[in-house]
Image (cartoon, rainbow, N blue to C red; front, top):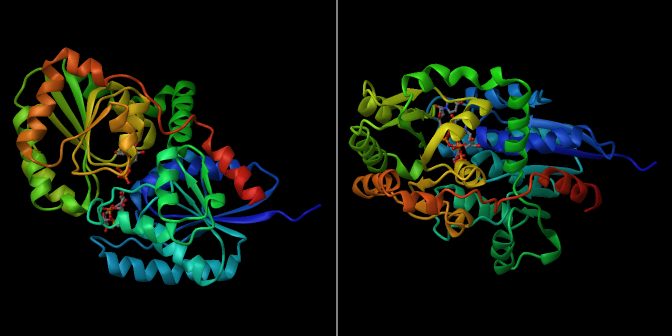
Length: 374
Ligand code: UD1
Ligand code: UDP
């Protein structure tokens, strides 16, 4: 019998955990692998919410988050601490997902030890190193030396080939976010109480159309966040809508949103939702307003129009499918586009079509097969 491949999956933030739990589940059930999990805990509470619902017990918890952490301090600590785990575990592969500081530092620590890196959600490019910042460069760094690139779409594969990545190392696997969404939908169908915590808000806003909102991008800190808050104040004066806004724990987000939007009748500023409740929010929302990456993938899969408060996107598939639209962070534009979707039925119908350019829900199994044979 050949020995099992030892896979160390490294992650640190909420979206990485959501997009990696399907793979961690798949590896744990597969005899071809010995699976280990290392979390940097670049996020603490928001990461733990995902670990709990997905029932993942990390083998290594580096507990790196500090309040209001800077990019350089986080990068330095993550690099050193993940390196120590690699020396201890000596895995055959290191798996990272996406574009955060943990991803970049984890991949470099592996490279320093000549351990091959599998990059999931590879090949996303906006073409602008400042949007999203610093994620665009984090992705390019990992893309320049990963041994296995799991591109979610053909478009992402094309971006890697244009950067002269070896075509044999690039595979279109779909995005594991769709696996995660299917999994959580099944869990909630079996156990509805997992997502019943929004019932009071749903009753309070009965008869109004819900706008689901998230915002956290670093490049929007300052003027961008102020503009977003001003836009919400403006359309929240309508009496036929209500905004449900789980506010990211980043203090740069909370200061602005709590300062500008607290106390408005039609706006519920709430704590970050766990994944079953966020899936419920997507379900009850008439439209989504976001600068998130993951929400740009989930909303099209569910046929929810999504207005993206960014200047560019590394996920053009949602825009091409017609479900997502870039609106930037100019307050007037956000208000105009939101009102248009609320008042123009044809414009709404044109966007509200379920479209799934990001995967079929079987990405984790494909990635496991690649890790077993690569
Ligand atoms: C990070 C990622 C971003 C990703 C986002 C997902 C980088 C540079 N940024 O941004 O790519 O889209 O996560 O949400 O890697 N905090 C808490 N508790 C938590 C999480 C965050 O208190 O559970 C606060 C802390 O004060 C922390 C701050 O948020 O210092 C910022 O966290 P950080 O991971 O540096 O940046 P994000 O803006 O969350
Ligand atoms: N999400 C969540 N609770 C929330 C807000 C978002 O579970 O209150 C999920 C959402 O479904 C998506 C992911 O978090 O899968 C997106 O994370 P975030 O916006 O923080 O990061 P990004 O995707 O922009 O990197």
